[in-house]
Image 1 (cartoon, rainbow, N blue to C red):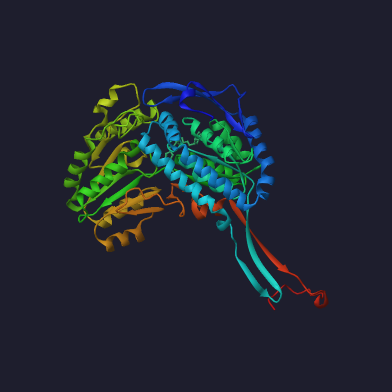
Image 2: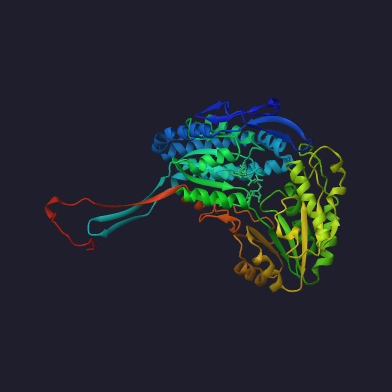
Length: 504
Ligand code: NAD
C-alpha cells in the first residue's frame, strides 16, 4: 500500500502510470498531525514537467480505456468498491491522522464516498442514450454519450476521500483518464485509493495523482490536453479556477465555500432543533461545507433554543481524532485555528455576544490545533463573524421576528450551498423549499448532502459552472453527447435532392 501510518515521516510522492514517482522539483511541504502539531511526512510538490508527465500518462491510457467494454469498467468499479469496503478502517485512520477528524467521522466519510463508487458501478445503464426509430422514412436518430479524454480534479483538505471519490468514480467509469491533485495538507488517502484501484484492475495511467500546490494546479488549468476540471475548495480559488480554465477552453465545475443557515420556526421541536444545530455545527469541528454556521431563530424561539444548544455543546468531548472517546477533533492547522478563534474577538468588537468561547476548552492547552465549540448570539449581517465563512466550530445565532425576515437573511447571503428549516408545519416547510435561493435544502434535516444518485451543488458563490457534481449531473459533466442520424437506403430508391433535409 502507498502510504500507511506505519510509514509516517516519509516522503509522499506522485502516482503516475501505476508507479510511485519521486519529484525532482526540489519543492515540498510538511504534513502535520493536527492532534499534536507534529510533522509526520513530507509531501513533494510537482512542477510543470511532472504535471505534464501525469497528463501524458493519462492521455496514453485513454484510447484503450475508452474502448474497454462497459461491463469490464463496471466490474472494476465493483472490485474497487469491495476493496474500499474491506480497507475502510485503515482509510479512516489515514484520514484522521492527516485531517484530524474523529475515526467515527472518517468512517462516515468513507461510507459516503463508497456510495459514489456504487453509483458508478451502474455505468452501463447510466450511459444509455435515446433512440428514435423512423424519425423519417427509413431514418433512425440516436444519442450516445462519449468520454471527454483527460480530466482533472483538485480537492480540498476537509474530505480527503469522499471528494476525490465524488469525482474520479464517475469520471473513470465514463471512460475518461483522470489526474487528481489532492490537498497538500492531506495527500496520503488518494494514493491509497489509487493503489486499490490498481489492485481492482484499473489499467495504469487511467488514474494518476500529482501532489502539489498552486504551481501544479496552474499547469493543469493551462494544459491543452486537459479537457475538464472539477474543483472543490474555497470560493476565491473556485472563482479563479473557473475563470482561468474556461478562458483556456475547458469544461469546469468549481464548487466553493458556504455559510449554511438553519431556520428554526416558533413551532419547531426545540430539543430536536438543538440536537441538529449542535451535530451539524460542531461535527468535524465545523470543517464541512455543509456544516450549519448560522441559526436563524424566529420569534421567541431564541431563548429556549440557545439554552438547549448550550446544554449540549458544553458536553462535547474535544480531543485527538484517534481517541475513541473524542467527539470532535482539532482543526487542520494552527494558522486556521487562530483565524477561526479571531472571529470570537471580532464578534465582541462588532456588538455580538459570545455565549461560549471555545478557547476555554481544556483541549486547547495541548499542542494540537484545538478549539472548543463556540456560540455567538445577537449576530447580524455586516458583522465579520456573519459575513465570512469561518469553517470552524463556531455557531452564530441571528434573531428575527418573522419568517419573511429569516428568508431575506438566508437569500441575501452571497453563498448558496445548503440551508435547512426546522418546523412541524408542512406548509411553511414547502414554502421555504420554494423560496430558498440555495442549491440544497433540508427539511428537519440539518446537513442535506444529496444521496449519490442525485447531484451535489450550491448556487451563487458556492458553485461556478453549470453542472453539479456526482450523480446524474456528474455523468453529464464527464461525457459529451453525440447524435447519429442513420439511413440504410435501398440503392434502388436513391436520388439527388438539393433541398434541406426534411421529414418525409
Ligand atoms: P482551498 O481553496 O484552500 O484549496 C482547495 C484546493 O485548491 C487544494 O488542492 C489547494 O492545493 C488548491 N489551491 C489552494 N490555493 C490555490 C491557488 N491560489 N491556486 C490554485 N490552487 C490552489 O480549500 P481548502 O482550505 O482545502 O478547503 C476548505 C474550503 O473548501 C472551504 O471553503 C469549504 O467550504 C470548501 N469546500 C466546499 C465544498 C463544496 O462541495 N462546495 C466541499 C468541501 C469543501
